[in-house]
Length: 413
Image (cartoon, rainbow, N blue to C red):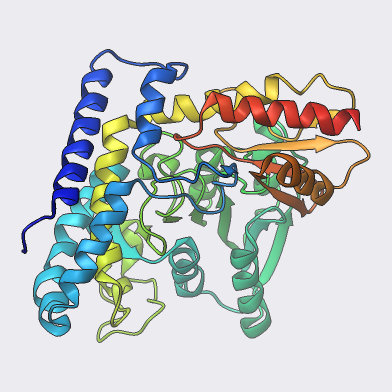
């Protein structure tokens, strides 16, 4: 490696000082309302001061340490691609697999590293052996990529899709669970559960649904795109057979990184999405036959894990829930305003849905951007209508105060 420039040395020293300060502050056990601590976390990111990004539900920015790691690995790969990619960087996948498994609370032999939740979940969706007439239970509020994958199997193979239709938001466990289980029959082979509904942040009681499915020998596919590294849990504790997530959302890993978890007993009889020499192998690695991949992206996941652990899973969940409730509690009593997301602990995290009577979501989202450069997303999907507002750990209360003032202004117009 070449010598670092003076600027690089100063930058490294600054980052080391920042992380040292974060670690020292953590020893004081800072809470979700400790703005001094969370201001330190914000400094670890390179987010633009010209906008207020409240659309972290789509994809999250990465801490600078993650960005720099990816660039470093990319530059190394380019020094001699076929050598550094396959003989050096490729050897790092096994240690990374173990670290992801430790974060997820599962066996490393159940973790496959891939590019996003869609790839992970479609591996499960297309890999589960089904026959014509077999039934799959899913919900109308699931993510479109997953819905379309199941519809493709329906069209090509004649499986039968049965649809739960949630009335959201709700904190009624029985209503959510029975929405799926009432559709189970002796022909049901799979139930597909979205752990956190991306449209409005509603948490679905996955374990209760999975337990009933297990009693009836029904496989369980869990979409964890918006819950992993957001809520605190161990993947096996959800009771599923398959679990997929994007790591570039709440883990703040590089864009285009994800993981697939497959219960050990299900690996052998699940077909891989990309062919390999032994598709009926019980080795989780059969789901990683992607050919040439982005090794720099994969390796930089390690720095994202370090950053997650630096903050702490529980501390992060508490902060995200606190941020959502901070802004929602200050606008929910305004005339015509409602929040399309549960507020109780355990039923939601960072994602909140703003609804203003008489105004279209796009109108509200555009107004937030035009006046205050607040970036959000308008949502209209299966009886869910509003503006999705999603802070992250780098979001300050000052940002949310600007949001609250903007909502007041829009309501008064």
